[in-house]
Length: 424
Image (cartoon, rainbow, N blue to C red; front, top):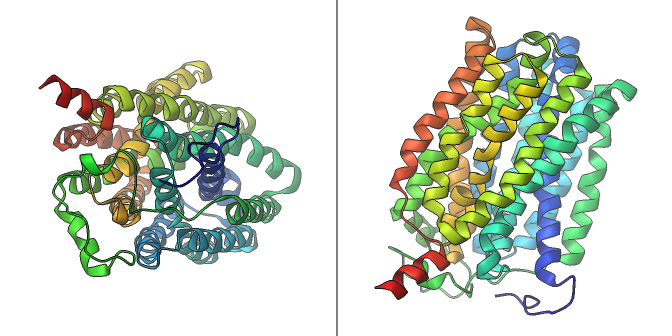
């Protein structure tokens, strides 16, 4: 485990590492969902259909999926995660700003495709830092802070309010130009603060590894040995599970803004505050669910909160009250707290940690292809054919399926396994 975890200062390295990784992933998702938050303005200006909005998210997700896998594999093989992270943050920020120059659907699709190529490795590499440099009792909590709470605070809570306000003041194109600035700051913080993680010595993980033995090579992870991760049941389960939960998450966030404006009759400002409730939910549940999983187990928390997540799209369907919708969204967005578990904690505790980034990227890959390239694109087609309400029904059904898939997991939480061992 990296040095600094035993520091007794108020601001030890573990806290600084989590804060920087939160900013890194949070602003990546801020830029990703800027298109959906500003979709009423962009679609009107570029004369786009709902299906085309879905395709914009799909092409981004396609490049995100491939780059996430190969970029993370590269970081595992080279053992230079910090260096890769700095470069991809700088480049995705540049192309986020360039979104503002798009004058057509085709141009927007190309820019977002290239942007996704550089944004894909950010999540798995950030979580590799968190896995390696967190104390065991805080691992689930830290991973939740990095994956869900950061997205909730920056992308979902602040994102809609800030982006809509900037758009109304300066226009959507200038708003995208301004998104370049946070990325430059985050890249500098990564360079100055983060330490290269030691993936070969992670406290509290080795005793939970199942099915996979440590690699014999001593210099990074090899491409050949990395494929052994697919023999692990938890990895395979997460790869299937991710397709359905990503369809729910990205599908809802993609079409909810335009649904609230066009079908529910909300104004842009009212819509932005309702969308901010998604962020508030992610903040609370992103800390609570992983923390509960540290104590009570990963598997039961994934099952319970996956099922509860259907409340959010159903609330959007059956109510026209901003207050009722907001309550349903907050409760239903508890499913976002599951992300840190199936994407990171379960994987890091199930396999040789040396391949953690590759395992996370593999799950991200299937989630992006199945959930965004296919799922969100299908949701867009359903919206044009049957109305935007059909997309909410679709996302609710996805989470029912995801809940059933979650029963295939086996438990990995170190504290839970330790209790089981002591009781036998």
